[in-house]
Length: 359
Image 1 (cartoon, rainbow, N blue to C red):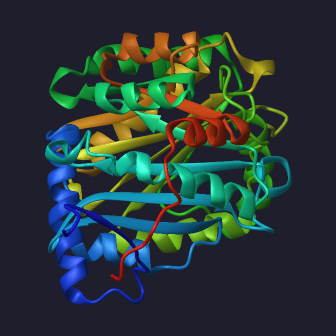
Image 2: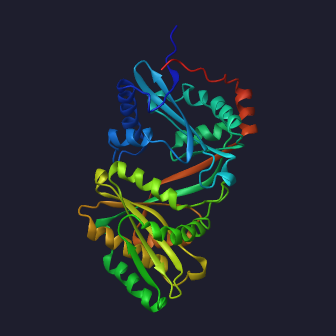
Image 3: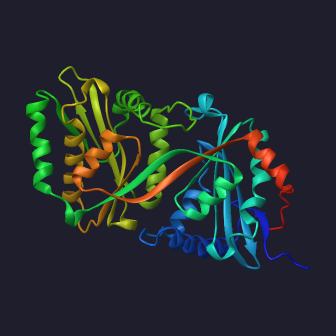
């Protein structure tokens, strides 16, 4: 008797057109089930990203197949030796898995658990990290014994609801509250010479972000990582825009950056916003975000919303976002489970090692 589903390993650089087509049908359905309001990335862009060698991670990819259909996908990732942050974070791995709603509760997700443990041994990792914003995914991770370690609020601000006069006031107030501090716009990719100054400043601020109870390594940012990032942004013609605040002594005191792509031209993606602790309490965060939103609105026509994500414990940034008009769109939980606990669960449930079918 043929099983109703099988698991295959797949390599995006070796997959034929039929498998790619089945994968695209799956991911479009999965995107609709996850959040139908988000634009669906074009097939060619997805293929470009997945075929491009990743300088930061080693990815082990699998698909769940039912006949000619793809009904689930799983990627188990480890940090690549020599990549930024490797030494402090090499013990942590990441899994991204999903199963179509009609195929859930049939053992597909569970089948990947022994493989997660096997890959953790292979890469000498002790902690596995997973994310979910959906009740079904959270219930599965709770069942496995993973613990929710961080809660992230993803919020949206719709451009037709922006109070532009309020944001103008925030920009104007900077001269009063922080005399001598200036805002600098980098409208496109950051100049190579500037990265030597910018990367340490961004790295310091990003390592001050709240991670709640999530185990994590130190964030490291190198100029060469920006070069790689810009190559990836070019795959969907994305633009990257950055504002910094600079103090009278020349120090970078705050940063905010966004991206925009003509492939989903109505959406702006907020990346990072941070202010160094030495310069907080003067309205820098408000001024930076207000200036950036104004710039995006002036540069691009037909914008619909801007999206941002913040730890639920990041009260200061959430307060700024709420004052701007951002409202919660989704809530993500980051789960982690140790290798010993994962192996104990697999053994207790009698889940056999993953047996791969021919792809």
